[in-house]
Image 1 (cartoon, rainbow, N blue to C red):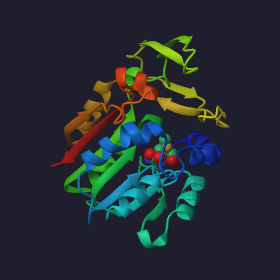
Image 2 (cartoon, rainbow, N blue to C red; image 1 turned 180 degrees about the vertical axis):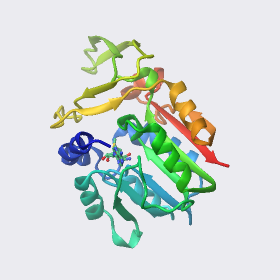
Image 3 (cartoon, rainbow, N blue to C red; image 1 turned 45 degrees about the vertical axis):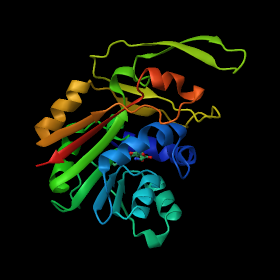
Length: 256
Ligand SMILES: C[S@@+](CC[C@H](N)C(=O)[O-])C[C@H]1O[C@@H](n2cnc3c(N)ncnc32)[C@H](O)[C@@H]1O
């Protein structure tokens, strides 16, 4: 992990934490989280690592569901917020750490590893997967999510937008332009909040093809048991584009 990436998250910590709030964005709540929760299965009484926990809303959620949660993140600013937002009665243990090298965590320590929207911002895919396998107990489960690599507007693709709809004031998505899907590159992009506030620093995104993810999981020794492209769980006009073209991709893999 380079200092540059650490600094990106540090500089963007406040705006990121405000964007996520205590429940995630509508994209998280309506599209991603129900799928992740289903793939994790029953967490009651299980040890769960929230790898790249950010401001900890998922750590808190799964602790409330009965898991014994450890949250690891590289950003001191986000960990500070996570600590402040988490009631000590939930027993979540937050630690500073890099998912590329989780030396401080013992082998076979976790039943579940959740890595939500982190690997697409991380250069060390192979190392992280190997660490996840090491800290999972036999039969342990890894669930990780990424922005869908084929329809990823953090890379060279984007939606081609039409005219503004006079009734809703929103522009219609015509189609998604896919280009240079096969080129695995780092892209730097600014995020914006829903109110249009620009994050202070751009984030690095590591575009990889789907087959690269599959190959990396298999080479880590984990067995893929599910690959999902979740759709919005609500039928609202707001998610017209996300119903037509999947926004996220979620993998579930097992340590045999
Ligand atoms: C998009 S956020 C996702 C946060 C959280 N998982 C969620 O779903 O809200 C990515 C998080 O990963 C963390 N992160 C990025 N690279 C990391 C690494 N190599 N090791 C640990 N955390 C990392 C960032 O600091 C940030 O909190």
